[in-house]
Every structure is written in structure tokens, then in C-alpha cells.
Image (cartoon, rainbow, N blue to C red; front, side, top):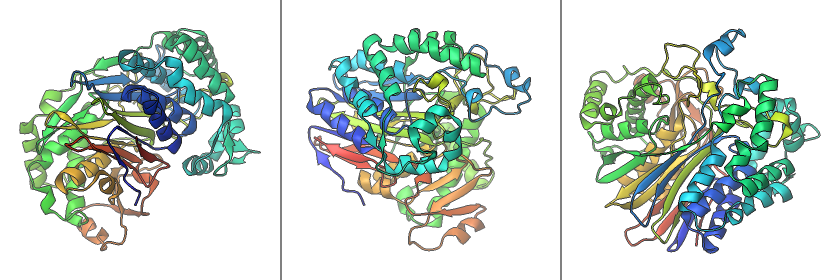
Amino acid sequence: MNIMPQSRKGMVAAPHYLASQTGAFILQSGGNAMDAAVAISAVLGVVYPHMTGVGGDSFFLIHDGKTGTIDAYNGSGRSGIRATASFYTKQGFETIPQRGPLAAVTVPGMVDAWEAVWKKYGRLAWDQVMAPAIRYAEEGFPASPSLARWTVRDLEWLRQDEYLGATFLRAGQPLQEGELVVQPELANVLRGVVAEGRGYFYEGELGQRIGAATARDGSPLVADDFAAHHGEWVKPVSTSYRGHEVYQLPPNTQGFSLLMMLNMLEHTEVSSIARFSPEFYHLMAETVKKAFRDRDRYLTDPAFREIPLEQLLSKAYASQLWHEMQASPQAAEHLSAMMGQDTAYAAVTDDEGNAVSFIQSLYFDFGSAYVPDGCGVILQNRGSFFSLDDRKPNVLEPRKRTFHTLMPGMVLKNGRPYLLLGTQGGEGQPQTQLSILTGVIDYGLTVQQAIALPRWLYGRTWGDVSDTLKIEHRSYEDISSRLEAYGHTVEAVRDYDALMGEAQGILIAEDGTFSGAADPRSDGLAIGI
């Protein structure tokens, strides 16, 4: 098990050690947690390019130490003005392609989110915050184990894009761990962002260049879509769980599904159920199914469809779902399509009471696997999750945000930040947060112990065509046959399997001591200062 660092001045937990070191450096240089979060986010976009980057989206959940308020920024992009279901169906598609220019449906929201968070809360100079990312892009960094593994898995996609092949392959073959990765084009993009701010990426030279290339290459995105982009500050949603307040981003993210799960689980004493038992996994899977049924029924851009959040998050509705589950435990139907799982979550705290829980992604590994005009920006394929069926709430429409899996979490206790948590992993994000939350709150574990627990994953991840209940068995009793007797289709996975996501977390004790944890399934590191 990873060592759990503890400190009094600040804590950083990120899925790549260079990003963690960057956050610690920014804090030690006089920056606050918000400065550090933006710097970490930018570095992750360089050193974890298969998981995230400037061509993707991000979400920030922030506790302001001065005011005690919880703030949130939705940094997800909208679809292009030409993006309609008929745009694809007229070309003979029944679903949106998952790779290539046609998979690039939504504007990246990442760069806008960086500037928004920094302008509202940052203290250091903009160029100082962005400098580490530029250095790693220009001078290079050694390929991490995760990046090397994903170049093997995505070899054919990488070979099909000239920029990706030149950057992440060596003579057409996958990277080896430790080989130097240099991205001079990306360094130039980041320099432009430093010099001109978000405008360079959206209204300026780069946005015009990307928009012209996407339009030429067949994507529904055009330059005007980049110029029209803006993220927004939003009010978080929350619920209470055993004396704690749990916060998530509102739709278009799936964060409310976790809150629904917690509301249901308050109807039983989770701690009375052995954590490694079939009964525990059965309870969790059935709870997940109930929440996912409503998530899939309603979740999309709330500007386009009404989402009855007040009802969904009410304790009365949770009671109804709980009683339904007891009466017919296998009745819930899961309707979701395949989920990508290339995501990077990180958390940072300082000694001023500031805390930032944030997450970012390209959707699938290397996103759309398309770099327009070789400019160094890997465009996300998040919009490929839109439906082409106009009967579905998440049907593709112009200037619309899609159903989003990204969901940074924050827990308050007695009105103060207590736990920051999140994970990579599509369908697994609310489930892994549920595992960590119950581990800490119900079973009394440290944040590192909770992250290292054997995990379950119900649903589909990238490449899956059916719903299964995946379980990390470890060396515990054989529970598959008993879970199958409950009606589950069980799939055993390896111990500490990366399929189960890469979680990070920070726990803050009553005396102000920070405990940080990085997932043993990741290339991450927690650093205290």
C-alpha cells in the first residue's frame, strides 16, 4: 500500500507525480490552492496526454477559505452550430463515430476554465502558474507506465494521425516507459495562452486555425463555435450523509447520481455489512442500478431539458427507491451506452482554508485521436456520447452540452472541508466515490485505505458491449457464485486493475492536519508541504 503523507501547510494529490510536484512547488512559491490547481491541471494536460489535455473539458469544485462558500465551474464545451442528428444520419451513421474528425463534436472547455478559476481566485502571476506545463512540453518528460501501456493499446489509432504517431510512437512502435516525450507544438499553444489568455484559444489565431481544420476535415465544429464558447460558474448540488454534507457539480454532470445513492444507503447501517462480502457488493450494485436508471432517463444539458433535481435528490424519493429495491432487487434497468474512461482527477488544499477538487478529460484514451492541422491539440471525443435518437434527452442538438461523466467530489463536516475525492473511470466515477465515502465514513478507514479497497464496477466501460459486475477479488473468499445467485453477471478482474479507475483524495482532520492519498492503480503521488 502507498504511504499516506500528512502535513499541516498543504496537500496535493494527483495521478501523475510530476503534476503533484508542480502543485507542491506552486504552494511553496506563495500560491494558494487555486493557483496550484490550475498549474496541476495544465501539467496533467502535458504529462498525461492520453487522459487529458487542452483539447478536453474540466470541472472545478472550490471551497473558498475566506468566505466559507462552495463554488463550482463547469468547464465543459458545447456542440457546434452545425451539430445535429441529421448531420450524421444523412452520412449513413446510426451513432456518432468515436474516433477521427467526426468524433470531434464539442468545443474544448479546459483553457477557459483555467483562466476563469485563476482570475477569480489566483494570487500568482499567470505566466508563473503556466510555466511548469510549458517546460514539460518543450523540454520533455519521461513516459510514465500508464502512458506507455496506452500507446500499446491505441497503437492503430496513433498510427492513423500524423501528429500522434510522431509524438507518441517511436518508428511506428509504442513508447517504452522512460522514453522522452517532447511536444513543442503544445508548448507553443501554452505560450499563446500565456501571452493572450483564453482569447488565443477561442477567438484568436489558434481558435481560427483549429476551426478551419475541423470544418475542412469533416467535423461539425467551425471557428465560430470556438469564438462562442464560455464556461460558467454554477451552484453545486448536495445532500447530507450521516452528518456530512456531500457536494457535486450539477447537471450536465452525473454527480447527482452519487447523491441519490447516498440517500438510499442511509436506510441501512452499511457498517454492519462486511466490506468484502457478497452482501456488500450486491447492495452497492443494486443501489447503483436504481440511481443510474434515473440518471440515464434525465441527464443532459439542463438548458435543453428539464431535470427534476429537487425530486431526485429528496429524501422521500430515496425512501421510495429503497423500498422498491427491497421488494424487487433485480428490477432496475440500466440503459447507458459505452463509457470512456480517460480522465485525470486531482485535489489540493492549503493552510488558508482553500480546497479544490477538480477533474478533466478527453473522454476516450487520446480523445478523438485527431489533431487538427498538427497544432498540438488533441481534440476530445466527448460529444460522441450524444444520441442520434430524438426521443432521447441526450440527443445531439446545436450548442448543447452532453451528458458528462466527470464529477469532482467534496465532503464537509461541521461546515468545513473534510474529504476531497474523485477518480478516473466513466461509469465507475460515482461507484468509486461511493466506495471511498463508505470506506471513510461508514468503516472508519483512512483515505489511503479507502482508496486501496477492492472495488466493484457495474456497467460498461470503453470497449464493453454488455453490463457486468466487475469485482477485484484479491485473496478473499470466492464470492462470484453467491453474487451470481443474486442475479449478477460477475466478471473477475486483476488486483488493483486500472480498469477500476485512478482515484485521489485528501482528508482534513479536525485539527487541520491533511492526509493525502494517490491510487496504487495510477502513476500518482500525494505530497504534503
